[in-house]
Image (cartoon, rainbow, N blue to C red; front, side):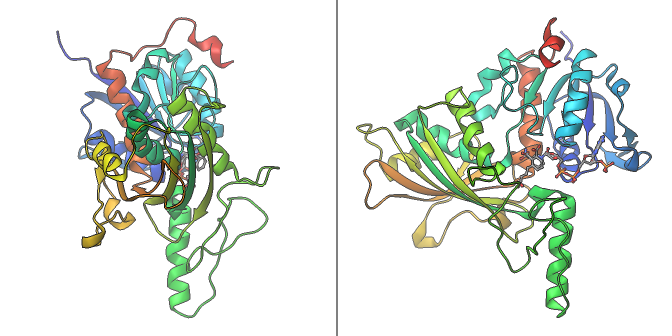
Length: 363
Ligand code: NAP
Ligand code: 3JN
C-alpha cells in the first residue's frame, strides 16, 4: 500500500505560533503533498519558506479549504469560529490552537501523551489546549496513573511570547528603553485592546487575559476546566480540585509553573516514586538534582518539544502532597508541536477523515 500524503493548510501562518507550525511540520513524519499558508489580507503576498521553497501567503477565505485534508489553525478564536466549520464542510480535519472550540462537547481536547484515545471521537475539529494547561497535564498524568490525583494548585510564570509576536517585540523594546534610561512604552499587556497597559520589562503582571466576576482571570479559568476535561474526561469533573494563579514574567520564551498536588491517600506515593514515574514518561525530561543545582529553566527549554520537570519534593505538612517545577517551550509543546503531534497521530490512526454528519455539530 502506498503511504497517504496530505494537503495541509496553516491558518495564521505569519504569527508566533504559525511560523513554528511551519518549522514543526518541516520536521514532522507527516507526508506533505501540498502546503497552503493562510493569514489575513494584511499578509497576503508575503513569502515564507517551507523545506527550502518560497511559499506565498494567501488571504484566508472559506474556499481556501477546498481540497485540503488537514488544517492547522492559529489565527485566534474569531478566525477559528468563522473558518473551522467551513473547512470541515469541505472535508478537512481541523486541529485548532484557539480556545473557541475547547469546551464544546463535540470537540476532543487533546494532549497525545495524556488522552490520545479521545481522537477516535472527533467530528472534524480537534482542540489544542492552552499552553499552560498542556505542560502541566504532561507532567501530572504519569503521577495520576501511578498514585491518583485529588487536588492541584498551580502558579504560572508565563513568557511574553504567549501573548503573541507583538508582546515579545514590546518586551525587547521596553528592556532596551529602560537600559538606555528612556521611558518604557506599553501598548499591549496585560490584555491587548484593554484600557490600561503596563510594562512587562523589569516587572511581573498577575493578570493574563480578562478578569471574570469571581476574581479569577480567564487564563486561570481555562487551566481549571481544560485540565479536568483532558485528564478526567469532564470539564466540570468533581474528581479533582484545580485552582491557580497565572502571572506574566519578562521572559521571551518558555513558561514555568510551580505545581502543588495531592495524590490519592494510601497509594504509597513518595517523591522518589514520582521521580521514577516521571523519568519513564512520554514527553517528559526529569531534571532534578538539587546537589548539582540541576532544575529546568526556560532558557534551556526553548526550541525543545519536551516538558521538563524538577524540584519534586514532598509537602512538609500535608500527607500525600507534593510540589514540582514544570517548564516547557510555550510555542512548541504549548502550541505548534502539540498541534503537529495531534496531526501525526490522526494520520497514524487513519483518522484523517470527517464523519458524514459532522458539519451539523458546529452550526
Ligand atoms: P500572532 O503572533 O498575533 O499571530 C496571529 C496570526 O493570525 C497571524 O498569522 C495573523 O495574520 C492571523 N490572523 C489574524 N486575523 C486573521 C484573519 N482574519 N484571517 C486569517 N488570519 C488571521 O498570535 P499567535 O501568538 O501566533 O497566536 C495566534 C492564536 O493562536 C491565538 O490567538 C490563540 O488563539 C492561539 N494560541 C494558542 C496558544 C496555546 O496556548 N495553545 C498559545 C498562543 C496562541 P496577519 O499576519 O495577516 O495579521
Ligand atoms: O498568554 C499566554 O501565555 C497563552 C495565551 C494563549 C492565548 C492567547 C490569545 C488567545 C489563547 C489561548 O490559547 O487560550 C487565546 C485564545 O484562543 O483564547
